[in-house]
Amino acid sequence: RGLFVMVELEQAVPLEDDEIYVYELIGMQVVTEDGQELGPIIEVLATGANDVYIVDSAQYGEILLPVTDETLVRTDTDARRVIMRLPSGLLPSDS
Picture 1 (cartoon, rainbow, N blue to C red):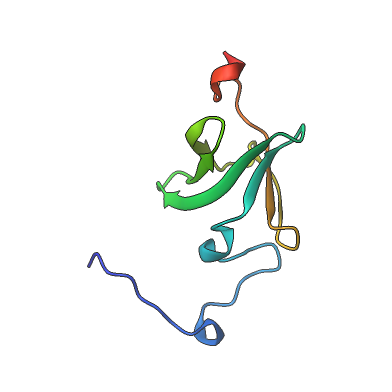
Picture 2: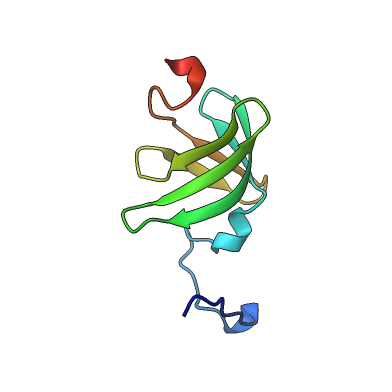
């Protein structure tokens, strides 16, 4: 308990076409639908209800972004970008 288990990628559970491993998200840039760059994902929290991306934003500091069908627009693995639709009021400038 409380330990990480590491396996060779070749032995990892196969993913569906629209899935990626959590480790692949680390370092991806988060961008809003309107093109505002927020910063890289530094951690992914599994809360049970939904994942939460922790983003290291130069402008806002640490941002916690809930990952739901409403907020996640697209994950572009080739460009290493995650496009998000932010809930109103999430960022200080939204208030």
